[in-house]
Length: 331
Image (cartoon, rainbow, N blue to C red; front, side):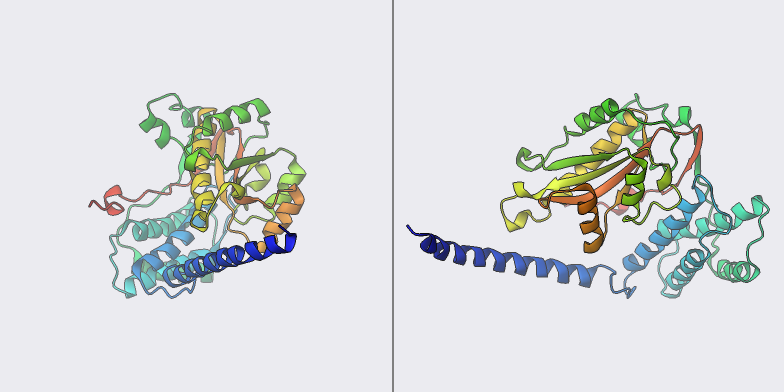
């Protein structure tokens, strides 16, 4: 059989696959655009709460930075207050735990600066105070969590409930390096994570060189104020060549997410503090990362984890969890 004949047989199959895959991906894109808040319409309570959640987390992270900058994030603080005002204007439930925590964060921001005798910009302070007069519903002031290294790790050998509840995302690291054997031990533990048909698509890149870490973190948003302290930067990728059909298109993210949580638990067990960093990056940034680290095209970059040894004292964001009953449906 000639090469030309083989091509004629293959082309219709390839065209069929491209057509099917394109239709599915277009469906995914339309579904995401219509149901996410990418259009910033705030036409549902959940969309508005998602924005409020985003802004309050930015502020609470700022309150826990290794060297919190006085007067930080004033624009974000006012945006958060405005979103909370909009929430009230729309008549949504002010007892919602996300809304209440957002208001408590605004109050904590004020209290933090008062406690440290730092005078905020007068116009900013007046605008924030005016908004809080509308928002203040006698919520309990939040206070970010403070730990010593010894106290933070006191439950690493306890029962699973105490162990898992003792882990937080930590954005402060001591200058001590992490030896390679310890990191490999953590990866070995994480490999017990289930994967689709045991295809084990997860791949791990570990960067210890400070200059390379700096270059990589320039491509990722979300590490400002602490990324420079990272001792080891872990990059997780997924080998997409193991997937066999278009319906497997999201398997890399599912498998990598499970692997990441197992790895975070393993790092906690080995007394390494860590913080997962999203890779919601542009195509341009991904290409730069691939070129910098020579990442193969068949590997999808999914997320990063900054980690290091714990300093003697540090803070972590409260980041309260929703009531499990509010997110669970029984059938």
